[in-house]
Image 1 (tube, rainbow, N blue to C red):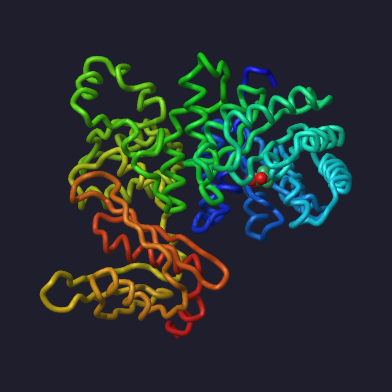
Image 2 (cartoon, rainbow, N blue to C red):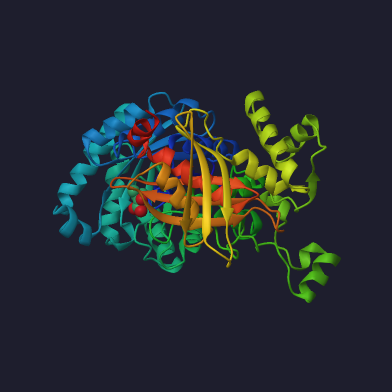
Length: 511
Ligand code: KIV
């Protein structure tokens, strides 16, 4: 690796997923992994194979299909974890095992009850084991930034001697600040005798809002891999946001004379995709990908931008893949124009997927006169309701407002059999959800109900996320429609199908 290249290690599917409500199913993980690969991410951390069968299957399926990126699985410093990661990664063209162990006094004393010397032995043996399966092994010193520098350097040296090709310096609890992190990375670079045999990596949590600044300080001190996630999702306050570090490097070449492999014009698509599958909207003023990131409101700014965009824009919206919200198509647009539009927006769809998206476009065009780029992106990214889902939305009639009762009359196809119910509620959403619960009794609890307008205007498509939880899982369901209540019903049904809480009840009802 040349010294002027920064490796982008994306952990959206592992650390990003590791926070409440961010869990993704296999189908969604594959969508995200494909998009990360197409964007040019160097390494995709696909999951933590030992964590569950679902994680194992996701790592395995991603390893099987990814063409360009290295595919990585996390593993604790345990034999079974490392073997499981290796097994999941078997089909990968370029596998990486990422193993880790805490090094800070507080973790060793209270969590692991181990002495420093014992930990050094464990690092050596687990890294050596991982090297038996692949020559691409990353070792992380969990809670590195609260570890004494002498011991941290010794741990790094041990890992590299045992065969680690990347050594990661996680700020696990988001505690460090840029000056301090710069000093830590510089010390590792200058004091670890075999550091020339490994790449130094950063992994920063955002508890103090400093993850991006810390990652960039590490790069200036000699780190050449940045671990990050799309939209900065992750544990607690999240991780370094991929879009922020990549665009900082891209925009400030004078300070960061480095290249990344990222096709920056894919950034908006990835951001929207991750928003859509997790249901976690980014705030309007989020750097790079927020709705206001390129909006100029004040008269002075608008005047400047009209005269020369560079007066107030440090990067162009196009450079991150933001197409101006231009009117694109309507109900008379044909298949050919649709196909060209899809290509312009950066999607590569197979014939079947294209046909399905075109059918959804035609349905939408029947209801909505003006169709914008955002509508088309939402159509393509939307999970297609599988015909094999046991519960299918059929029809909804809602009475709402201040006069009389608020009711929902809902028809569902449950295992192919049409069933209708009419219920009252405290408002139309409550009535709709109660109607679903009446037709499909279940114990799952509603944890989130979120509505997002894809574009502006009263005829905009609503994208709805419904989060349901049972005793063991939290699942997001999604639905979109020009009618917010229909989108809400679809999202609830989608979540129910995923949770499969209703399967037995459905069989009972249908017989
Ligand atoms: O935050 C952390 O320390 C981690 C490591 C496993 C890299 O996620």
